[in-house]
View 1 (tube, rainbow, N blue to C red):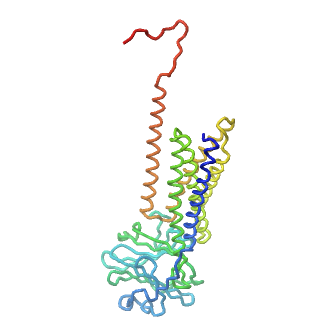
View 2 (view 1 turned 90 degrees about the horizontal axis):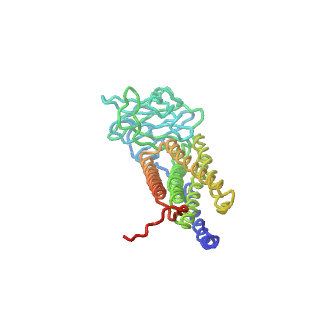
View 3 (view 1 turned 45 degrees about the vertical axis):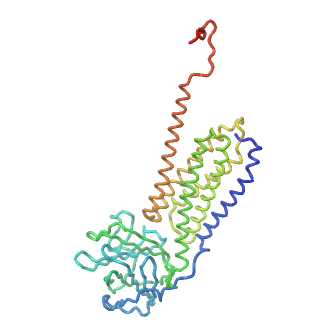
Length: 406
């Protein structure tokens, strides 16, 4: 254990590092909270000039009163609200497969209703409403949903390398800021069963302003920062600090300083993760009770770990053994629940393969390193047990060392 003098010498550096780390996490959190959002993007002059009269039936041909906004990649969303009728046209790049637009209460796929369009292998235009009851293919129900279509048939058509999905909704209350989902798949639907999407996104579209604006940009940035902070803090920094405490105690007192500093840095990243998560909840009211509850629980465990640093008893204290047990097992619980929660968060957000591969790589490296160090520690202990004691007292009258030389 480090003596009080060496700890006093290193304490100012420790405080400076913690302050710098708080500033970094604060900046990331502030960016996610919209302070870095740009101006509202109005898109009436940036949408392509498309003549819908040549391939869409009425009333979708007249777009002179429609507001148009680029929403994702080269996707364009046109709409017009007239009384209780909302006309929507989604234009997207297309070769084969399907393209869909979903409407959600909380920005999540499950529980949303979507309009999906495609051109079959035989050149027939298809457009259907689907209810996304779950994530399995069997839970995507055709001709079901909560979108109230009026008596005007929905339409889908291609023009060049684009597909255009048009429909009208009968709304009792006009859309305001509405979470919408955009997705596409590269395979034709088989018997009206959709293949898994190749890519997707979720935004909050402001129908009252005709733009995705800072609202959707803010939420997307917040969600991205939330995931980045979680993987860096809970998935990388805190496990490294735990590994140092378990396998490098022979480097006393260096291991203690490294462990304390690294864990505090990881704690601030974890704290920033939870803060952004609560901000997302307050803005989107996403109902993910398991993810939210586990995140708060892991934060409470990490707070107890930080407090343990200041309540650490001396080695000769009677309660030191209890403290060691509490500190090690609470730390393990926090890391286990954090790993589970990262996976739950990626599932809830519908994270792409890059997120899953990235976290899988980080998690795999941590597991491999821990296993290798655990095996080396076990072999070292086994080797120490097999060594004869340095000193051996012979019993009275026992054999003595040989006196003859070699």
